[in-house]
Each structure stands twice: as structure tokens, then as C-alpha cells.
Length: 243
Image (cartoon, rainbow, N blue to C red):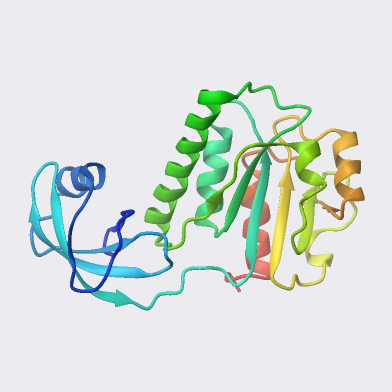
């Protein structure tokens, strides 16, 4: 059984004793039921993993001493960024969670022609905060020490003309090339996927005019929450750390 991997926003240094926040403390004491002298790993998003030992443990407060900085490599050699059309329900939540587990370094939610969810103001801010929490939880589960960036939601038309990042791909069921027909990306990949109902013909044309290459994932049309997982897994197998 691997050590629990817990996020804290605090500055972490070897030899320091810290008091964890209430939410992770409750998880450690009431869900994991860890006791003093139990081992765990901590991360704060700086890319390092900090091995720690619990000093004291109550229902709402856990104190832990950082005993060492571990040398771990959990980031993929190619920087993957996912731009995804905002959809109804929990589709974005699921896609984001799995994409973080699969190694994305950034996430951009997009308002597209076929986006039916109305998000703005305080409601949009709450959703962005919710997505940030999903990304952190996925890092805890997968053992990552670097938290992917969660960009502010953007309108597709404004975003696509400024999206300049390495290899730019758009999933399109009627495209000719597949992923294994493409050259190996140099350093980064920007993956664009539409919401339920997909991107419109106009949006696909605009994306292609701005440097995106349309690719297909086989003969079947995948749901908006399935497509990122399939594409990222395939790219990790072809070019990344699944090899």
C-alpha cells in the first residue's frame, strides 16, 4: 500500500513541523484512520514530494514533520494542454479528473456555439474553484506533485486566434489522419475538443485556419467526456510516458 499523498498550500521544507488544514486533517484521521508515526507524502504544487511522519492526530487537526524531500518523476515528457467545450452536468468534471491523472499540464474551459450551460459572474467563479479542487484531488490520487493550471473560461472565437502552443490538434470524426500518422511532437500538444454535440463546422474551420490539425480516433464518435481520455491515453502511448 502506497503512502497517502496529501496537498497543502503551505511552504514545505525538510525538518519543519506543520499543522495541516481542516479538510486534509479530517481525511487523514477519519477516513484513512492514520495514527501518530504513520507515514505520508505531502505536496504543495512546487513539483517536489515531501515525505512526512504524523506527530499528532485528532479529528480536525493533524501535525506532521517533514523528514525528507523525495526525488520523484511524475510529469510526462510532453506538455499536454486540454481545451474543452463546457458541457452540461458532470461531463467536464469527469474529463478533467481523468485528464489530470493522464498527465495534462493545463486546462482551458471554452464557451462554444453548442455550449448550453450558462455560466457567468459568481457562478462561473464557483465552477472554476470547483475545477481547481478536482485537479488537486486527481493529483493526490495519481501521485502528481505539480498541479495543472486551470485557465479562466474563454469564448472560443477569442481564444482560438491566440492559441499558439507546439502541436495543435482538434478531434474531428471525419478527419483523415489519425494520431499515429502525425510526426512526434517536439515539446507540447494543445488538444481541442468540443462539448456535447461537438464543435460547429465554422469553429472547426476557424481552428484549422489558426494552425490546428484535425485528427480522428477511429470510426466511432466518442462522447465529450470520453474523447479526452482516449486521446490522451493514445498520445501517451505513442509519444509520452506510456512507452
